[in-house]
Every structure is written in structure tokens, then in C-alpha cells.
Image 1 (cartoon, rainbow, N blue to C red):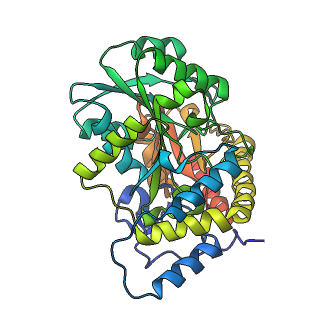
Image 2 (tube, one colour; image 1 turned 90 degrees about the vertical axis):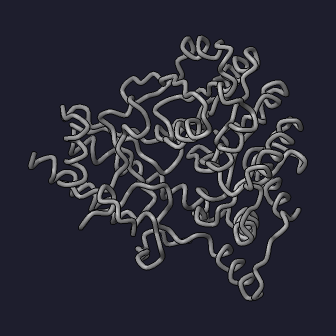
Length: 390
């Protein structure tokens, strides 16, 4: 049994989450529940592997060893029931850097890239940073339940200038796990219109119904051939600071194009300790993850039940995946500036402003519930008191 209730002091560890000077997240007396890392110790096997490697006093340039890719293959086979080839894989320092590389590798400056909003904000930033045009297709929301807008997608994917789509699967911040039928329909649309799909599956291991996530490369050969998938151990095992992720595609031309652009951009290297940590996590961290998922789900249920029973002006559905809650404050009747003031200055909570994920996030805040329950209890009590003072 792992003790996820244990509060670990992260001050003095150079933690962005706890020690940044941004007053929106870490102002005086605020509880930071924003950036997506966890306040839990990683699996013991990871710490042991890092200590063992650290005892060798030379930390020179590493190779991308076969052991690393083999551990990924074993993990994918166990968790998703899919057999993948090492020749389909490459590595990059992070999913966001990888998306930057992919945009440059697969599009030209005049091209358009489609995203489904509200969505993880670095997608739009990456597209704009690479000099491409963002095309947004809003997800359809009905009482907190989100679906793809198929008519809108079909229309926008038919634009000859849309060459690429970035899919968030599972979706951040809404916590949806897309069904096989949805992914097949989307994939077939992209194949029909010659649009390559970048599938960000960094939260794929954090699903609450085991086996519910369908990787894009597990679909038809045609869909797989029109896509690349990014994944990492970082969210799963709380290793984000080790900057190690991988990209997988069955399409060898896309793989060559990606590797060539990564080299051109000086982005082809990954972290020595990140590889050691990933191998240890994938081979020895599964029991830890299974216990973690039970704890996270209970945290999500706690938040849902708290606002349902005590704060009817607020709602939050239990997500199907991720440790991120999408909290709806629209019944309070506040504009976004007023809502942010309530959350940050009155309740003293460092949450993510929903507008950061797109215009569809107006009236929402994103909360990171990957922390000991006691912190969530404190956070909800602060929120309740702030709302009742309003």
C-alpha cells in the first residue's frame, strides 16, 4: 500500500507549482492547485533507479537505449493490448517540444492547424509560435458533457489549407476518454481530407475505466498511417521534471520527417535520468499506478459531491481520465474577471483560469486534484466560505 495521504513539503525543491512568484497561483496564503504535476512521491522503484545511476559520477551524453523502447513496448502491450514495433518510435524532450517539431515537420508556414476547444493552451501557442494559423472547432457542451461537433469538423477539415489536427486524447481539461467509434469517425474524416493527426496521449494511462483509452495507432492502418502519437511517463508517474517523452507512428516517412526536423531544431536529445526513470516506472510502477488511480478517482468524487451538496452554484463532473477537474461557476453570474478575483483573492486558490483553454472556458476554472485529500478539503472549505461571503 502506498500512502497518498502523506503531505510532502515541496518548498525548496525549485517547484514551479509551489514556488513560482506568479500571484495568480502562488500569492500570499494561496493553495496552488494548477499546473499538472502531482503532490505525490513517485514509485519507489524510480527513486531507486535514479539513485543507482547517480552513484556513477559521470553524466555525459546518453544514447537512446533499446531498453527504454522495450520497456515502452511492454507497457503498451500490457495496458492497451497493442503490439508496437521499436522501429515506430522516437524520443523527444517533452510532448510540447515534440508538437513544435511536428508542426514544422508536417506543415508549411501558410498552413492551418485545427484544435478542439476548450483545450490545453500550449496547442494554440505552439501553432502560433511556428507561424501557422489556428483553426478552432468548439466541442459541444451540454450540462458538463462534451461531444465533438461533427458538422463543424467536417467543414473545417475540408479546407485545403488545414493540413494538421492536434487531438487531445484523453482530453484536457474536460477529462473525456474518446470512444473507439468517435476516434474512427474522426480518423476517417482526416484520412478523407488528407489531414495528419497529432494525438497527444500524455494522459492515456490516467483513465478510471481500465482499457477504455484507445490509442490512435490501434485503429485502422489508414488512420494510423495518417497520425503520430505522443506519450510519456511524466504525467503517469509524476516525472515531468525529467523531460523525456516519445513519439510513435507506423508511417516511416512521417517518422523520418519528424526526426529530421528535430535534429534541425536541435531538439533530438533526451534526458539521461529521464530514460532511467521511465524504464523503472514502466517495469516496476504498475501496482503504484493502480493504487493511485483509485485514490485520484475518490478525490474527483469528493469534489463532485462537495459542490453538488454544498455549493449548488458550482458543478464539476467526475472526469473519465486525468487528475484535472473542470469546474463550472457560470451559475454565480460573474464575469471572468470577477470570478478570478473570487477564486484567487477571496478563496485564495491557485486554479487555472478556464479562458486560458479557449473562449469556451468562460465561467470555468481547472483544478488539479492530484494531491492529498486534506488539501482538497481545505480548498473546498475556502471556496465555500468565499462564495457565501459574496
